[in-house]
Length: 266
Image 1: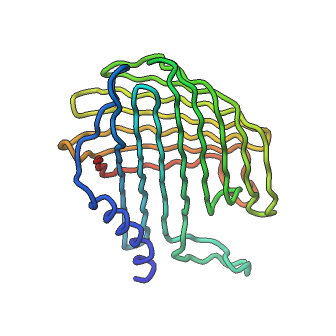
Image 2: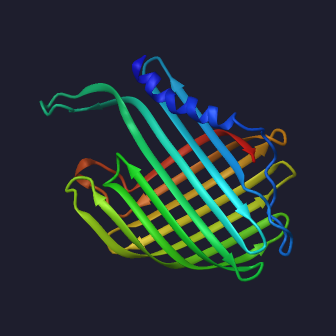
């Protein structure tokens, strides 16, 4: 019961935050030349629990702050993933495998971008991302980049944005504690398609490539609106790092499948 309370505590905080203001439909981005919109907030929350032969608890949450006007666009993203499950292994080094109910995922990420528009289709951007992951080869990774963005498609139903530019990464190796810094190239592909009046398909691919490691994350999601305030979203996330600890059995690619409730308000 103590482990469950520790896992559910972040859930209560997120629910409290989401309920602290009136829920409204997200304001669509203005057409080029229109007046500025205000800041919008979208929150996602998913929780899964299982009991019986095996125990597991999984909590994932995400907050997206966004604002767009004729001159600029700003976004701030906060996300968290925490899970506990029955894990089998030789924890004390005595050569005997045992099963423990322990933390199996613990990751927090914050990121932000600011884009200055040249016109409706072209922009210059600056982006930053910070991540802590207890089950990665790095304790943390922090990146900063800037560059050029271009909309290949942008209309009422479809959006396709690409960004490319140089950047800098600083990370701490989990095992050795060494601080590693290198220059990177950041690329982003952001696609959105409104399939019906209440169904939206999104896919975002982020790549940060440097000498020490290439990080890639792809987020594919389908959101179905139930009313102007509430939606249900199914998503598949794939994360890839070229540098991992093979001897510890860590794989290059992680996948996460979620079904979340999505609230949009301002």
